[in-house]
Image 1 (spheres, rainbow, N blue to C red):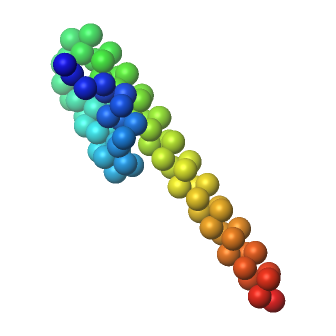
Image 2: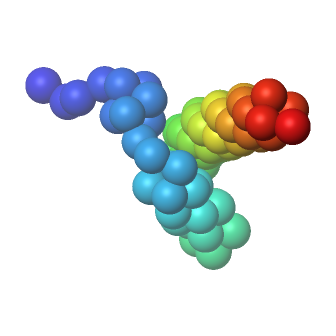
Length: 78
């Protein structure tokens, strides 16, 4: 039984998802693929791009939270 591709993508860190996305793009750009294979790769690429976006959004939120905490600590110290 094949593992669920979505679960694998959902467990990837940013670097892994981005590298996999680059591989998908290279495959789509550089090879003569059957329509079905191209569509499968395109769908996987969309899922990988979404995962990268989610991880970047999480990192951005964490950075904003840390900066706000730092500002609050500086205000309290003043």
